[in-house]
Length: 162
Image (cartoon, rainbow, N blue to C red; front, side, top):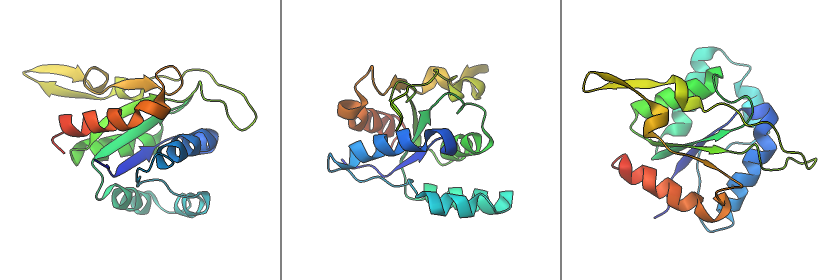
């Protein structure tokens, strides 16, 4: 089943890698939402925080899964955090995909970043539970994301009841 998916990533350093991941998915006859072009993001980021939040929320509409593409400096970024929080609130399935091993346009890989789910917790049965113990992460290169991303997305969508 095709899933409308929102892709969250640190725009400036990871845009090229993120577009490669997204485009590999599209070439397999899947449809993705939540991916925008650079002109759109450059305009949006000039706006006030409340307008950026509304824009992100609009991008999330109709999606069932949020994929956080994890680069070297993704964890802790203001808008990544907002996208994770908003995705959780709307009941989206969440998953992380490390993209540091994917070569950039100049042929370089980068340092593995921290898991952005490590800092998020919920309380279950009176205990704090980390998002990183609930939501899976994969490595795009080492776990063959090209072949497996569709099944990863489907798995978290079903786990979220979507």
